[in-house]
Image 1 (cartoon, helix red, strand yellow):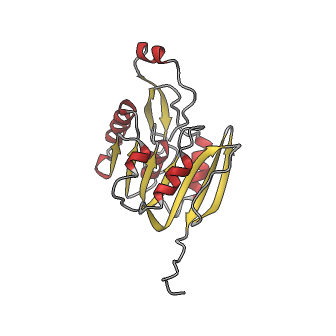
Image 2 (cartoon, rainbow, N blue to C red; image 1 turned 90 degrees about the horizontal axis):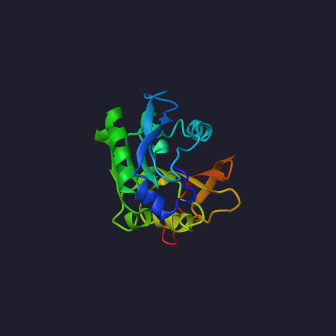
Length: 210
């Protein structure tokens, strides 16, 4: 997952092809302390180590065996951390094909390509296809683009298990709009972002007993 800041001018982007610079460090689990290359792309950076460590301390019991969906994956920092800590499988969704290719390379480097894949697609368009439920969703949309609320609503259309956990990073000065079935479980603030971990509790319909 990444934070995408203000993009450079288009002309600058065309003149400067993406290159691998910088490193992503896996914090815990099987691949602890492994360093992976990060593509030099405007606004692309891993979620800070402190935030990842806090999040996966919260998720210590839930990550092993989890089916993970990492939306707006970017470097894939959160999804990779989940795989390192025992997630059964992970699906990364990243719109930029160059960033998606770099993430696929890192999955191959770690030897986890058999239990993870990268979809080079727009997140909302991806969520519009027939769903498969996930037990852990990592959601880090670009700021100031109004993407958090529609993505959260779309996840409720069959993408979540009954007791799924959803981690959402959003602007620190905005309260995200989430489905009524999501209950806030934990939260952490870092700089201009606010991370919230929700637990889903399906709301019974009128036809449901009890």
